[in-house]
Image (cartoon, rainbow, N blue to C red; front, side, top):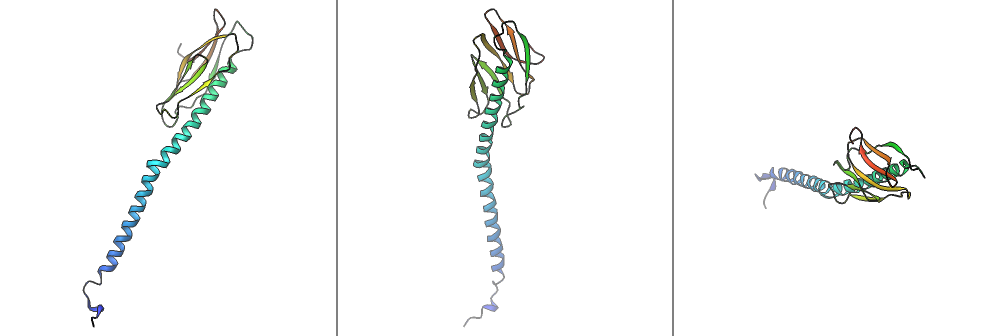
Amino acid sequence: MIDRRDRADRGVSPVVERTLAIGLVVLYVGLVTVTIYGGVLPDFRTAAGERVADRTLATASQRVQQSIPPEATAVAGSTRVDLPATIRGDAYAIRADGSTLVLEHPDAGIASRSRLALPGHVTRVEGRWESGDRALVVVRSGEDGLVVRLETEGRE
């Protein structure tokens, strides 16, 4: 019979066990990190960015619509609009496209549109806001009715 207590390799077992345990922990941490930063986190940031973009565009649309006086033809006024500096960490722009506001963002999934409810005496909506600028809605009398412009404070 062989006496296992006299073997020279019996000290290797604890070292192999610890090495395997450390390897499994490193593998688990690596997989969790890749899953979070490779899939779950970007999807969450995009979904949150879509919500912020929708709220930003809704607020901008509301402020444009509130700036237009009902049944007025001789108007000269402006209203300040507060916009977030970035959406999902990127700069964006809001521009007028006919009677629609368009939010342009580098991530196509975040870009969106909002149709304005304009009274009949508004002839056109024009202009553009860049994120980070101080945005104004300027309403002026035009030849055929009111002209609504998206402008930046300090620039015309």
